[in-house]
Length: 110
Length: 116
Image (cartoon, rainbow over all chains, first blue to last red; front, side, top):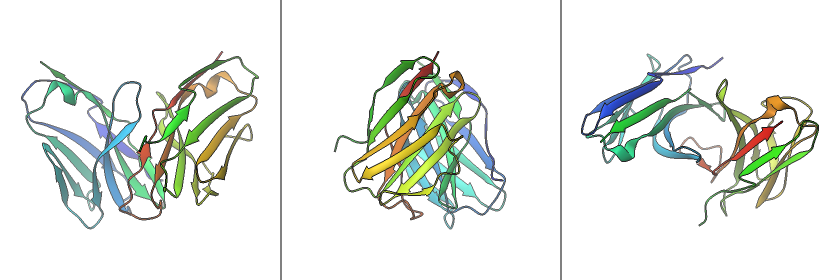
């Protein structure tokens, strides 16, 4: 059974810092891995999608990497801003289902 | 496009009552997903429709839960009778195809359900 874990569960950093969020999964048979952002009281917004054949994807200050063989992904956020404060979830697509991690709650202090 | 629309945004009901949650997917999207989010279990897929047909309902907790998609622009998730342990945020999401690995799911704002 696929399990997705995210570490740390919560993170607080001062504005301007670069940071890394981690995601691990137990079964490497995935089609893709996605990173989502969730703001309080709102739905999820897709940030980046990495196909299983790809190693990384970039969008602005965000960079996500995927190492399928080791079952790991990282989300790198450069020059963090208070507006980046949210919960970040990773999810793997396996057999037509998205399986979500437990999320990392990020707080960027001004 | 207005995105995925869910109603109501908040629902408070008493145990034993019937609850109906509604979702309007993004126009042109062929797949629709219902998720439940709780602190204990995180975000879980309940059921998935493709072209209005239920494809996978293995995540539906029990017979008290049912979902329908009578047409491409509307879906309902019904709980009858409701129980306090059903309290959660229920999300609806839609995607263009649903079966392609490049597909992104677009989430609605969710319905926060409280069963007293």
